[in-house]
Length: 82
Image (cartoon, rainbow, N blue to C red; front, side, top):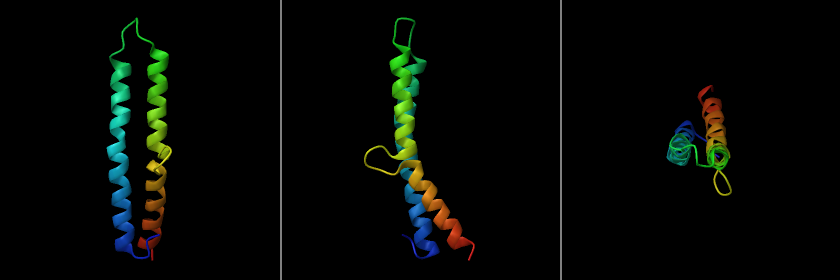
């Protein structure tokens, strides 16, 4: 856990970068939904989009996703208020 405002800011920026990078998975899933035709399985494509969004939000099996960013932001704000 960050103990200084500088460390907290670095952690916040690192978490933000990770989430932004992971958004590519959501973009690709959205493109698949958008490009679906009448003979494509929309249910499966929407399911993939939902899973991609969930992984970005929670970090999936490995990461912390936007949840980690939220914690880093809270810590940064806490240290900034001092």
